[in-house]
Structure formats: structure tokens, C-alpha cells
Image 1 (cartoon, rainbow, N blue to C red):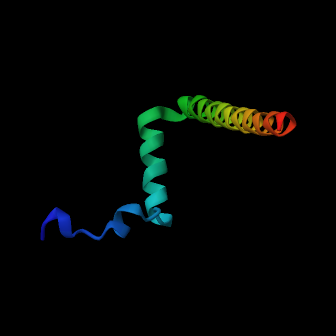
Image 2: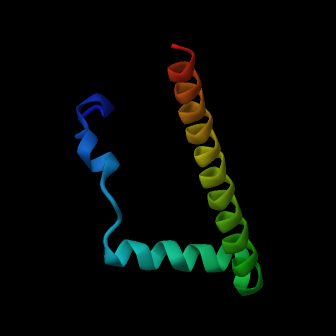
Length: 72
């Protein structure tokens, strides 16, 4: 069987319960118990910044549309 015949759905599926346990165990082993809160804080800050940027872009687009409508 070659790599080209692998079902792509298998590559995109989410991990099940047992797989999540292995992932969590690997994260704990790699980062240690003290680094996990820092990692989670960093992820949260990144998500917050992404959402702020997304809102900013949305507001700029809406302002541009309103400005265009008032000129017309």
C-alpha cells in the first residue's frame, strides 16, 4: 500500500478518549507540571489577541462600507 492510497479522512479525524490521555501524558512529561499553566496562559493570550484582531478588521470593514454608503 502506498502513501497515496491512504484515506484522507483518517488524517483529519479528531483523537478519541484514549488518544487524548496519551497526548495529555506526553505534554506533562515534556513540559512538566510547572510549565503547563504558563503554556495555557500563553495560548489564552494568543486566542484573545486573535479575537481582538478579528474584531478590529470587522469594524474597519463595516466602517468602510458605511463611509461608502454616505458618499453615494
